[in-house]
Image (cartoon, rainbow, N blue to C red; front, side):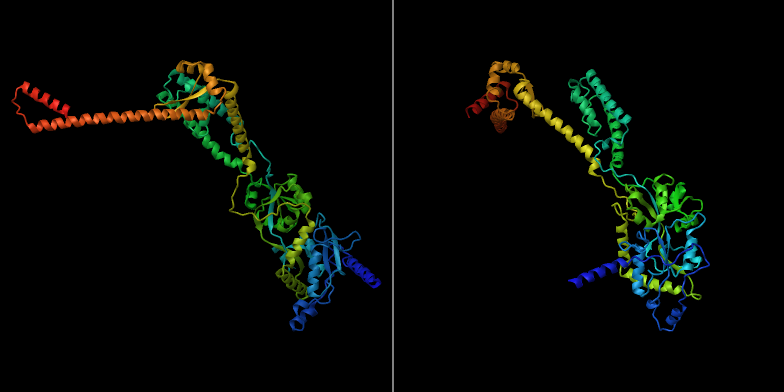
Length: 589
């Protein structure tokens, strides 16, 4: 047991010792008089004569490494040593390379705290000094033509340094908007529509009052029906039946107005109800931003600034000192577009201090594809530092193929994320698909449900009131000219005149005690009417049979007369006698 405890204590001490390495090379920035680069030319010769492989060319070497402690890719603890729990992406990558190449780096490195440079210095100068002073500059360096021209070489990149644009998006408010269906028209237009409906109803009412034949529906007796049909015209449902030229002229004018207004409303409604997360500035590439004279924030002396000035010398560039200032300038309105790298945006989009409301987004297409990673001095003859680049390049390719680099990058993003915004995908250039949401359409449904509920309530109230309390109205059915039955209403007084009974008797017999359903009464009346029609049809059939017999007798009389063939010269009295005889014969059978 004691032995086990000693082992645990030893393991704990060893775990605490790993990652506590401190800076061993003190730096004097931009001092070119001192260099910590080592000569590896002997190892280069061994590779050339075949006695050493490239993968093991740095075996046993303490690689003097330049690092930037910026709490993004490389972190120190409170004591100034490498953070044991979260050393950062750079430390993890260097550990993986050292394990594969059998070299060390943790006991021979120099650090600069932060990455903000003096005002009179640039990142290109810092990169040039670091590769000339150290075996490897293990920082996040973007590859560019100007840097290659300075004698800097780059092994395989491990992050995406492509230059992209960042801007604001419209805030996607998914809350329910009951009145979104009113947005296609302004308030003034809606007021004019309502005024037009009332004015048109009054005008048509006046036409029908002047001539009660103006409309086949005789709307002059019911102004509310006239107003209802006018309002329904706005929805494209035209129910008027004008019968005079003046009424037809008014109806044509109203129909044309409804057509224009309804078409405009329908065309604008979809665009107002579509809820989408679109950029506040509609640009597809950096050229659009420059053409519109947008101010563009860039970090001074970086590959993003170089790319912008090389492609668009006249662009309105706003230079800042760091990535944090870059996004602050965008939020404060100093610039409308921020130019950064894909890797930086992958980090900062999930940073609460930068994108707490998730309104910043990648907009447009990628401006310049690029990759970033470590850098070394391009030297193949003096100190043979190019060998370091070749060894790192080999092992970085191995780590990329085994997806080790991808795993470390995802681990880095998870450790640095402080807010869970949706992952920004590369915009689809030709994808304009939109979708109507229930949040946008909900107001229309709710208003419809409310109005329907009101209509049902009023109908139910009238039904209850008509049965029990408010009126003594009884539905009857009469047959129209088209032969269909239509309900009418007569008072009990009118029924009294028709049936010769008192109103109290009718009420007591049909409404009072029984309180039978109106539907049953209607069915009984229809059955009675059908019986009457059947009786009339039977009488008509008998009458047709009689007429048919008369026609048959007349035809037989003409046939017999033609067969006797009486001469035409017979006197009139003889012809009359024959007709009388034939008539008697027919009568007797």
